[in-house]
Amino acid sequence: MNVTSKSPDSPKTAQSTAHFPLADQWGRVADDLRISLIDKCNLRCTYCMPEEGMQWLPKKSLLSTAEAIRIADIGVRLLGVKDIRFTGGEPLIRRDLEEIVAGVRALHPDVSISLTTNAIGLDKRVAGLAEAGLTRINVSLDTVRKQTFAEMTRRDRLDAVIRGIDAALTAGLDPVKVNAVMLRGINDDQAAELLDWCLQRGLQLRFIEQMPLDADHNWARENLVSAAEIREQISEQFRIAVHPAPRGSAPAQLWDVFAKDEPVEDATPLGQVGIIASVTESFCAACSRTRITADGHIRSCLFSHEETDLMELLRDGSSDEDIARRWQSAMWMKPRAYGSDDVTLNSADYVQPERTMSAIGG
Ligand code: SAM
Ligand code: SF4
Image: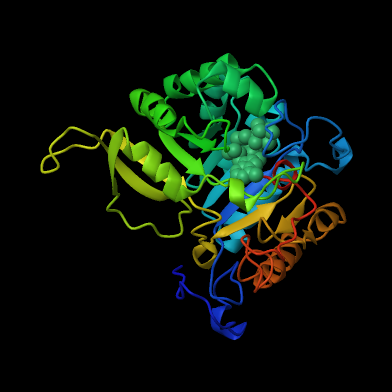
């Protein structure tokens, strides 16, 4: 399933892309499914959640174990999904996570099943998750300094996160990736330190530019720690060079990381670092994501103001084919870029969606 156009300037007709199961009118195909399992979380990262006052979804409106497995199955079996990622909120809060992973794995032995987590409690669950069929894991960690961690997450839980990461490595999950957001004046001087820490443990670090999806609406373009700035900062301690493998639809630009003093000719990389420039070098034209919120709504784009309800079909006896058709129609209408054709994150016209990152499922 190749995406034929990298720069979709004009809509395609339904006819021309009908053989792509989750195609949109701009020539893209979604085969990467993110399912949010819960909106609750045990941290309160400032770029994501408010300190207090979050309105949680009622338990009965969350996808049940069987519904989460059914959604994943329809995605893979009928709609060409190749990668499934469970996220939240904090997916480890769901006690049935192992059951969900095992249920999807039993139906689809070859699909990639991954998890994005803050790793609190992962040390006790990761062996079971690996046994259930989890393929890969991404852990969010923005700093390895205790005080900065507490400031960014409003909780003193760095030790628990590190225990979770160590356990994921011991369980043999490969790769274990680390997601990090840099905040101006908080941890923006720690990019190289975090990279060094990750390289020493064989972790693949991904920096993500902060996006305007925070509950407090504090995001400001002028405070953004850009991909360029992150590259500059890590270049003070390491030499980096664009990783030679083609990027495809991956949101991260990968860089090989070398010791600074090693001669360039026969240098061996210490590892890789990814930088996701969601704001300054947006990758909408190559986006292959389709998202399901914890209450069973399709979101074709993180920044979209529109959602399509799949939960009602999941609960009213509709067939898998009916669900697949509604999913296809919703994805066909995926915006070309950032929620509307002319509005980018850099524009004053950008209006933040009502749901925050924790509620959408990052
Ligand atoms: N709780 C889990 C975690 O933190 O990994 C999963 C959900 S979290 C919403 C998923 C990812 O979104 C995390 O890596 C987090 O750093 C990222 N994220 C949250 N808010 C963000 C924002 N405003 N800009 C960029 N990334 C954000
Ligand atoms: Fe929780 Fe993840 Fe949001 Fe942090 S980024 S508050 S860990 S959902």
